Image (cartoon, rainbow, N blue to C red; front, side, top):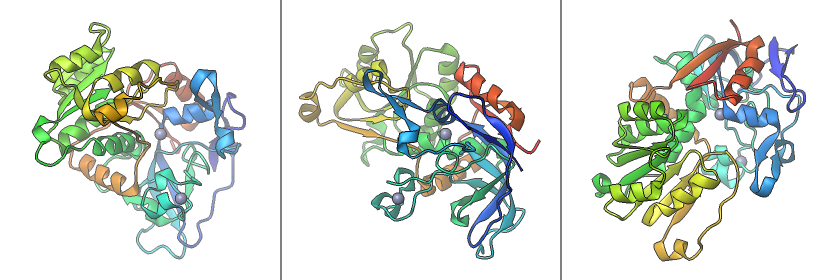
Length: 357
Ligand SMILES: [Zn+2]
Ligand SMILES: [Zn+2]
């Protein structure tokens, strides 16, 4: 089969002929229909993330080994199953839950494989979906796609899942839902998904912040109650306070989470407020420490989500309550072009690869 491999970081991916895996036991071989091209693929390709004060956090120091076939937003058709598989058949259409753990650590045992101490994520720690076929270690990581198209379903497994998990963490105390304010920072793919999820599962008032009028207009269409363009309204903390009778917001979900947005996000919280950090743009933040106890803040992060989250999200998407925004479709041998376009900001929504076309 053909697979696109990262051989060395920052060098073009190479399309190689690699051995087609043979599923055994509970394993499943999926013929890939669609793989989403994600920012995490860029970080992997570039070899890491920007940390504080110019420190570069290398993925190889966190257990990533090259050569590797990336791609963790995978949907397709079951090609072959191991002899232990009972719940799926050849020909079934599936979405893959890629955030696998080793199954033994406290995170795995509490259902949060996505935060496993020894992660085994497909497309990061083992071969993923930038290939014609991908081997899934167990059929329990598959979700049936009854009505959803492959192309729109794929990115639910990562960007959609991250937005969904972050929004779930923003839940109001029962009885106070209609007085609850959520601010979403960033109206990119995740921010727009978060607006839809929040509107579908909460009654909270949603304010979204970005620098791009086009994206903000889209957020408005999807149900955002307030939009703030920080190019026009630079004191974004004041804007949010004005919208909340001077108190600040109950929750901020920061999909950018860089040096600038994190400070603003912190400063716009109401007492008892919660800051949910999601973006991986890098950098650091100086904290006004007494504020955290005095105002009872909670600072937390959200990274992808659980298998249960993905199941719930697929249901929401199947019911038409959330939709993903797609950009261009690429063939497998255009994978470097896809990554460059994403890196250069030329992709709005999701770029996808169809490896078997
Ligand atoms: Zn684990
Ligand atoms: Zn991703």
